[in-house]
Amino acid sequence: MITNYMKSIIAWLLISSVSFYGFSQVSSLSDLATGQLVSFSPIMDIDSELFGYMGVYKLGEVEKGKEKFEYVILDKNLNAVANGEFINAAYRGMYSRFMPPEKIGNSLIVSEAHIHATNSNKVFTTHRILSLDDNEMSEPFYLKEGEVIEGERNQKGLGKDQRNTASVDVLIASGKGFISYPISKYGKSNKNTKSIMHYNPERQQTWEYIFNPYGVSHKKTILHIDESFMLFSIKDDRDEIDRSEFLKRVNMENGKEEFSYQIDNIEGGYSHSFQAHVIDDKTYVIGRMSPYAPSGYDYQKAEGFFKIVLDSVGNELAKKYVLWEDVKEFIDVDEKGRLEDKSTLHSKEYFVLKDGSVVILTEKLKERGVLFSGLSATDLVLLQFDKDFNLKDEFTIKKDKSSSWLWSLSDYLYSQYVADAEGVVFFYRDYKKEVDSKEKNWILGIVSIIDGKVNHEIIPMSSEEHFIMPYVAKEGYILLREFNKDSDYDQIRLERINY
Image 1 (cartoon, rainbow, N blue to C red):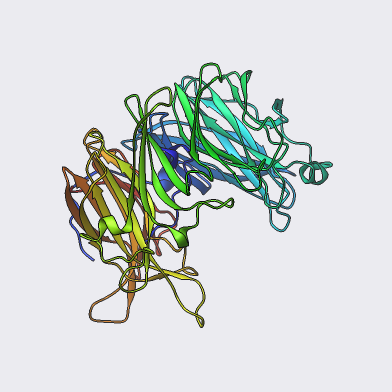
Image 2: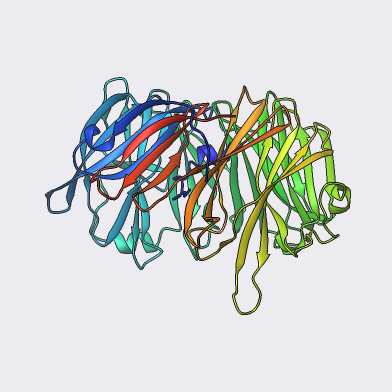
């Protein structure tokens, strides 16, 4: 899933009453290493299974422009399996943070993003590779125009160099190596960004896939990546009126394009927003559509949902559109997608289960009017479709309103498949008012869907004394990181969840 390989750092998730069913292990982060904890992230395998966690501690400056760090690797049961130290450059005027590690074979790509506080063009990455076989950390390296450059970046002239660089290279594991995926800098044209490059674990380039041979502005998104192939969508600006979007599959062994499927164009009548999921040898494209426009999908004009199924060479096996009028048996919605309270449903995640059935998680969004501009988010709504994409059931999860200035607008956090992909469990937050007082506290909601049955539980996550942040964990568990106001260090623990 794209949400796992892009592996965004799980947000500050917040989180009245549920039962925990025992715990596996408790660790104090102060016992794992010395120094200041600056990063704690899950480590995912290429198949989106949890391998463990990585913590990085800042030990301090060892000389001008150099900082020492200690890393600790935990397995999924919170057993420490490796630790060590390394020294990184401290770039002047830059804020730096470690990105979630990428696992290739039995090694980890450890990347650091460096961001200037006021200059959005001055942002870049540096990388190391940590071997878990011998616990050796490589020397730092970075990429420049596809070439691997060993060592730290030269501080002299760095500002000018970054002003002339239109994109940031993000390294993504591909099972037997990694790709360099260019992300455009804010306000910079991506016309000259033309390819994705693949490297082996020894950092040697093995192939280059050119996705933008015409050198035009474009939008691209990686939707899936594994050891065998990559799926991504691309839409370019060659034609000002008919801006077609394509789903492309690329072989990860040789970089050859295996198919190119046209998702939308002016003749099709729709623009689309979608995710792609792979089950066995089939690709499921699930999403929403609005009337075709060169600018692309418009959530304010959404007309419903769609599902496309492709085989391994891009042949269309099934295609179906579900309009708002088709779901009125379960949802009181008008032809423009508006509910009775004038809110609209916005998709947060599309789950494709092993039998081909689909669960769509949506969230109610509503404009707050003239005086209070922006959006507010309220209930989560689950839509369950059978394998033929007929809506079979709806389940609403009530929660308090969230506003766009409070943390982030959406309360959805993350999800994982369970029961051999026959079910799914997802997590959300809610800043909830107590029944008998005006006091508000964060809660964590845990929702599972297995065999069409929905189970919903909630867990208290904040009080005057503590705050708990949840992380993805091995199946059947959740990892909780607890901050206590009277303690210098926080603790992490695995708790079994009931679903």
